[in-house]
Length: 176
Image (cartoon, rainbow, N blue to C red):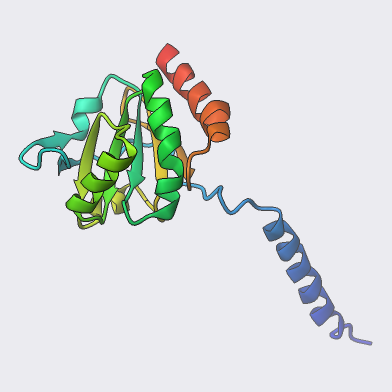
């Protein structure tokens, strides 16, 4: 007697196992292949002064955050007050990457909501965002003194993420 009728049962059980594993995953924890790899190099115009070109090499030697945002992004507007308050602590410099946005709209948002950034870099065509592996905005990267990406936050930064994850990592990286 052949057990060919057990094949569909085995396939069904395997599908249940995959479904069970998938349901336990956190959709906010999308692994980034760039963690522990050098941050992509860039040379971008600043939002504040388009004639000024800012280079990623200017951040070498310091731990810094790169916050990818846009004025049209509701999640960015949600996290913005958190970033404005955090910037006041001067715990770590925050650089903004204005992603696929109109500079006038971005400047208007910053004028109205505050500017937590040391500098805002204009990524009009989104190429720099793509090099960083941006899935959507907002996303924030913690980059160490050697220019290595150590953490990626997908979605808005909340006070809890800031104090439980980002700030302890920044302190650890600054002590190294």
